[in-house]
Image (cartoon, rainbow, N blue to C red; front, side):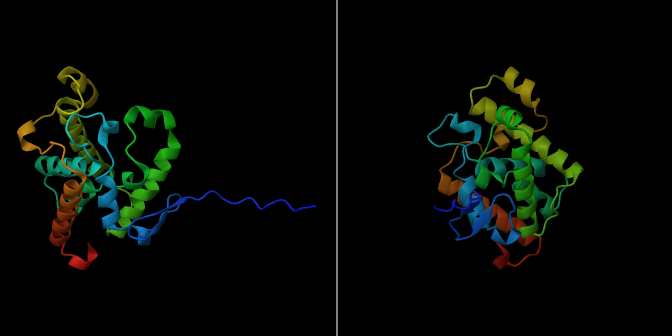
Amino acid sequence: MTAPRAKTEPRAWQRMLSGRRLDLLNPSPLDIELSDIAHGLARVARWNGQTHGDHAFSVAQHSLVVEAIFRRQNRCDAGECLVALLHDAPEYVIGDMISPFKAVVGGGYKTVEKRLEAAVHLRFGLPPATPAALKAKIKKADQVAAFFEATELAGFSHAEATKFFGAPRGITRDMLDIAPMPATQAQARFCERFAALEEERGLPAAAV
């Protein structure tokens, strides 16, 4: 009689283009590479791709917009700006799930997201968990970005966007670069901004 086959655990890692194998359930900072983050985020569409333009509005471009708004709204150092730039970094492997669906999925998604965020932060010398006060400031910048993305790109009326994201104060459309750009351009700009912040933090170029 043939012995039953051993039950194998489901694969929980993803092979990245850098060659790293990133364990999604127990991610290691050693398997985090900026090149993978930038490449992935530049190819993940905000709003499930339901935006106007010849190109998707990527999470990489959204991250640049949020960091720019965050700088305008706050007196902040380079480390805090880097946290803002990386606020959606886990989405390079788990994708951008719209808020209504996150509410349906519940805690499992948030658990994976938090573990990935901690690994990303540790990789780049940041606190594993974002302090509550800083998180609130980044969230405020995120809401402002969402308002302009919603009204300019995703077909929301101003009244609808105000209801969901609040009315932006002190930030106007002309201050923001939200014309959807090609993935390769968004990827390059994300890397450039990351490198500039690392230089401000006094870290060597090899750390990028």
